[in-house]
Image: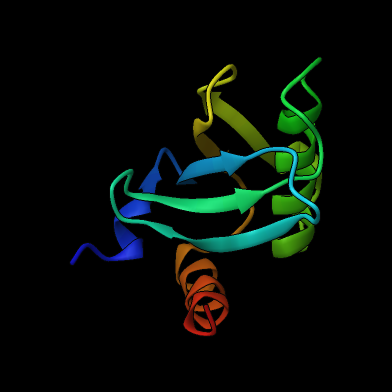
Length: 107
């Protein structure tokens, strides 16, 4: 079985996350699980995939989760797709992995 850590990498002093976005959910949840087929961490957002609203909510939810500024989160691939790569600055990969692991353990 694939491990959720395969969705996390380090590049150019930024942590990169592979995400599978589920728009139009009843509540926003990050992380919402791990999708083994897509090798991505799932994120649920309330916003629909129109007018960049879902992308904005993805950025906001990740920033809130890691207690960083939304300016430190950038979608670098998949602007118009549910499959996204997000670059995150000002967070240590070890701390990020510990926090994600604790969250995913209960799912």
